[in-house]
Length: 363
Ligand SMILES: Nc1nc2c(ncn2[C@@H]2O[C@H](COP(=O)(O)OP(=O)(O)OP(=O)(O)O)[C@@H](O)[C@H]2O)c(=O)[nH]1
Ligand SMILES: [Mg+2]
Image (tube, rainbow, N blue to C red; front, top):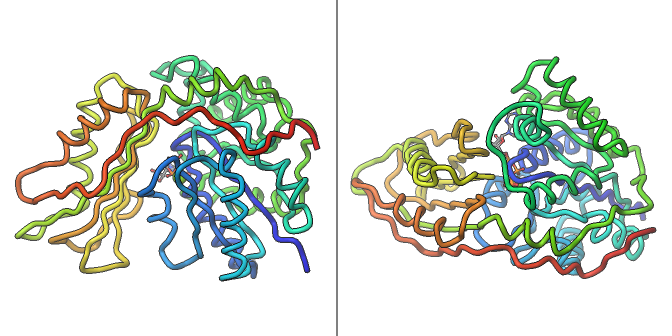
């Protein structure tokens, strides 16, 4: 039997991994492949799963820890997908604050499950506006040094750096960013894409499907600094039932909620605020809102077609802030006149110290 292709699309929070994965999956399907998707998070109630699980592709989610720390769950999820839909391509989205994926996921997959999977090069997606600030090419707020340690390690282990959202900056800024990335991360091939506008995706996919994972040695990672950097990011997941006597505009509801949260967080840097709203009446309609930095636009990547009376709101917030502050901010921001909100689940925490199941520095 042919081995299934295993693609991992990493990159920092908000870089566009979920968007890119759904686009890659569609291209693969058009090319005649069966695709299975795997999402991942530190906790339950994932916006990404809600976005991807729209019936187009089978999705498994791994919650309660990252792929590295739950390697066996990753393999089980793949086996489950294999039994239900026999994908010939798996696409996995690791947690955006995770690094050391080569040593903790790619190498163990190659070493232990090499008969089942052909592991593609690790792609690391980059949001160009975020990267320009971090690389000192543009002014603007960023994260503290230990969070930036994780960001840098992600790029240091990238086999392919994919500059996404190229629709946001002109070609001279793209050239400058690419040159800076090339200087700092000479090991990686650099590609430019726009997942939103479908540019560069076919070429990226061609690289992934035709090239074997090139790395044979993984970069060193100082797990103390990595753990401290990851723990500086507060994590909040909530699910809320919304109900109203009159019809409400769900898109507007999400926009207003995002703007209250952004205002209340003030100078605390948002890595990604993402929300979905699914009406109870129409299971297929969904609104998705994303905000990937404090001074960025709150964008609705999917809008509801009709007003609604009741629905399910999922809210995932990752910011460099105390988890208790995130919790209070969200609890204060949700109640609004005109609808009742029943908070069915809310949790906020700092990710625990990563303890990978395997760590293989070489293959
Ligand atoms: N302008 C532009 N926006 C994009 C592009 N790709 C993704 N986005 C937007 O970036 C935001 C974040 O996208 P996601 O796909 O959720 O990012 P992610 O990397 O999966 O985020 P996490 O799972 O939280 O780490 C959304 O508003 C997307 O619509 C792109 O090519 N261009
Ligand atoms: Mg995502």
